Amino acid sequence: MPQTTLRIPTRGQGLYEFTEKASAFVQQAGTMEGLLTVFVRHTSCSLIIQENADPDVQTDLKHFFQRLVPPSDDASMRWMIHTTEGPDDMPAHVKSALTQVSIGIPVMAGRLVLGTWQGIYLFEHRDRPHQREVVLHVSS
Image (cartoon, rainbow, N blue to C red; front, side, top):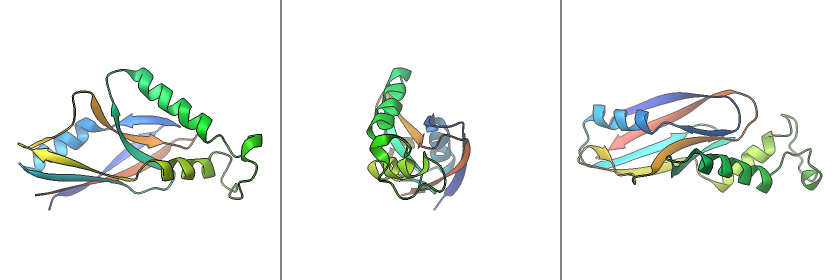
């Protein structure tokens, strides 16, 4: 079965769309009907399918998660023990646990079956830049 690894550079917290790369991979694989499995190989970022038409959606999601799980140096988060890697690390693990690290997307007629406004995103939860690896695997 066809498989590849995408390397997605991030510049800090936010959403990084890679729908076009995933679609191109499915087309190159030649799978007409099947399932694309997307898996991120990290514990402080995650994957989401989200609206890709209005960038305000991405901004609001980023801010929602920042309010939901603030940095560990925030007074409300002082109970966190894992702080060795900085105040954004343990909150990044929590955000990753609240979302997902693997997504399955159906393939029909050689194309991803995404809705009109849906895009595939890596959701970076850390403040500093990273090189993230996302594994794509298509099966029929």
